[in-house]
Amino acid sequence: MEKYGKLKLQFNEKTIEVRVYNPVLGKLGEQLNEFYTAGSSVVNAAYFNRSRWVENVCRYKITRNKLSDFDLSENQSVEFCENSAFSENRIDLDDRSSSVAILLESPHRYEYNERYQPIAPAQGRTGEAIRNHVLTIINNKYRELLTENEYRVLIINPIPIQASLFFLHGQPLKNSYKTLRDNVWIGLWKNIPEFKTSLINIINSSNVKLLLNCCTSKLKYKLQIEGQINCVIKQINHPSSWIWGIKETV
Image 1: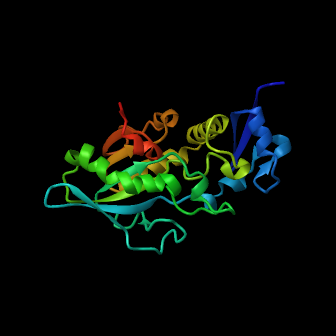
Image 2: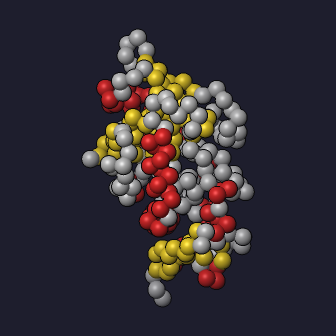
Image 3: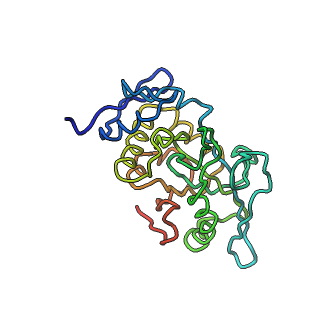
């Protein structure tokens, strides 16, 4: 028996094939639903529909204090992403203000409800880590790069849909299921130019001055947007591991 098979992703009119471990393909077909055709190993276009995309957000504001450090404040609006564990605004509101952007890779389990309806980015442990550690990171490592007195803090997913396919298998994001997420993410990023174009436009139109690329290690260098955006880029580890320290790579 072959160890690997082909998973087909239907995105609009395009079909993308990705290599997947066969036991994972079997797991995807265990639950009957509208999003997956088990016989032909196809993730149907409905799974990637625009209504399933998680919106990028402005979640915090940092303001310089009298000691030249920054203080963190949360947004007061609760009208956007009303089921989020955090308070946030649309990313295009007040987009002339300078920003610091935290770049993740794609939404996962806690960014959706049990009916696969999107909530907001960076929920669960990732969201808590950002809230608990982002100010320390900025003040300790990047304060000198920020010359203005106030910045928005944005959270952005280059792929705004669930590349992990968690809703179809319900398994932890490790081993073969982490590989599944990576391969689906890479397949979408390579074959759907809209994602890269949109990311570049969002960063440039949001007046981002510092971009923290926190994509996980295998995906971090797949973006290849240097030279197309007007900001400083720092490659650091994913927020889920910030509790153990910040690792910056070249």
